[in-house]
Amino acid sequence: MMKKINFAILNFPGTNCEHDCFHIISKVLKQNCKVIWHNERSISKVDCVIVPGGFSYGDYLRTGSIASQSRISNNLIKFANQGGSVIGICNGFQILTELELLPGTLIRNTNLKFICKDINLKVNNNSRFTNLYNRNEVIRIPIAHAEGNYYADKKILKRLRDNNQIIFSYCNENGDLAQNSNPNGSLLNIAGVTNKKGNVIGLMPHPERVSEKIFNNIDGIRFFKSIINYHNY
Image 1 (cartoon, rainbow, N blue to C red):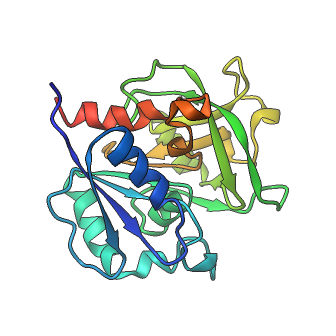
Image 2: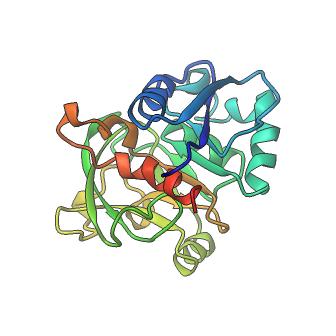
């Protein structure tokens, strides 16, 4: 029997997906979960921290930039550097790049519009966040963002490929990384990456929104189950 693991969800002014994540973790998966307000300093007795989606500080200045200066950020960096599991979803991904816990940055979608729709994702690599998916499996996950266009220089892109850090890619239903399956212009169709150690992940799609049977799609639930599985072995 698997033991329960301890999740924490960070809450910044303007984030709005902490409730969805909390529901999936605590009610659906029956794990221990708490919400940590951005003005707190401590991240203790936690296995995994989730930085959720939304519009932290109204996306002023640059998405995620103000949130990265919050009191909790230094402890998040310390937690990650000590090997703790960190998940950044959508705005959370943007915050993690601002904190330099993940390489690259997220810029405006190429069509300069907010995009909200279901897309296909290819699971490229096994990780602590994807160990219950098959490699090269195609899953269906929604996106909702205006700044999801992943950008990095050629050296960073090469390192990401060489180290198998590109975990999710936008693809068509056959798993091909076609340009017309790229919703926002991300280089290499990148939808999600990890740091080199593999303990921090950022992804623009929202797995928490497709993790219950009532939505007729539970492709996202194995993302969260994977991290529970990882911390049990």
